[in-house]
Length: 204
Figure 1 (cartoon, helix red, strand yellow):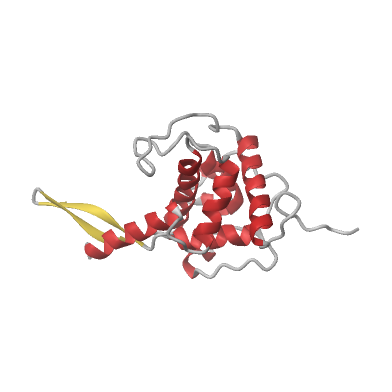
Figure 2: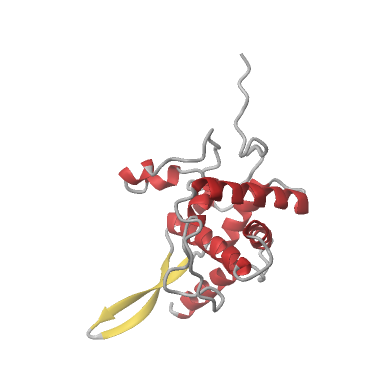
């Protein structure tokens, strides 16, 4: 009996995919599953989300209605077309991966990993109140939070580019991942990371 190794979307293997960031290596799960749908089983145990494959986490981030009360690139993005629609998020990521492979010739999983590493802030600021005075102080970001912020900003950047644009969300997600993997400032996620770290540096 021959056991065929699983691949993402039946096309892309994780063999040879490297994670250079030692802090994120434990939390970026690459192992593909037959169906990228854990159905929220990781919610029963604290920090169990780290066992969810990173590609599925990207799909989950796509199932949002926008950045909440804030704005992305000065735009108030609202809508619920992707909320709860895992199959639609699945198709978006699959098509984005195909575009990435066509444009770069690289493994899209490696591009995603590189984009996450370049978009994950290493430190942030927190508010501290003392004697009626509130001030900001720099703190290190936890690895799991770094991963969450990176994925959130990558998706927000893709939605921002596709909002009121002729480009589809698949094309914008592929472009955002490619730019972030190359650490180019044209990436919304990289820009957010550098801004966060710059503020934290000033609050040390």
